[in-house]
Picture 1 (cartoon, rainbow, N blue to C red):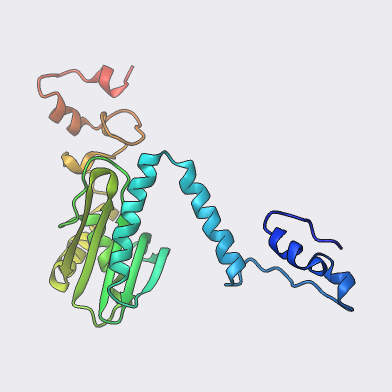
Picture 2 (tube, rainbow, N blue to C red; picture 1 turned 180 degrees about the vertical axis):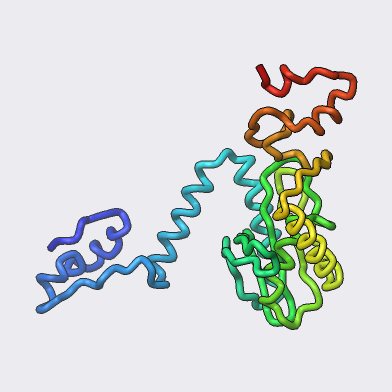
Length: 238
């Protein structure tokens, strides 16, 4: 069948007419089987075009910020010939409930491991002693059995915040034991309120940044409105 005279085929067709009619020009010609999972130049090119199309749909400011993030990540990747895991889900076997967790990017060799987390908010999220990052570090550490700790990275270009913190084994071990204790209390049905900055995305926070349910957390209301004694309207009660 005659191949379509497309823009990408123009150079080839104009240089060799037969290339558009290979089934006529070559006896027994069989076209190749296209497999999008094979790592070849054509598939890599298609994948890169898909990425560029997504980037080009973004406002220029966002595209520039993502470029900053990619540059930061690539500088880390250049340090060693790391194996990499992208959005890779694992079982957290050090917790009784055996939950799943997924890090944005994990780079590892036998004696070194990095966990990188992309944040898109404009309020800086700092990496040092960050419990989410320590959770990732404790969970993915077995991938680097000779490592003496984990390099943790927050990549938050919209807040001009891209930083690295090294968590040594003793810090990870302390976090692990603290988290196990908290989980044990939760599984036993603890309902102890402890309002604070960590409540930002709690669904019971009346001024949280995520989706909100009702009624609101009474401890947070006491913290926010210490002089108010009747919370019925705020709590959404009849």
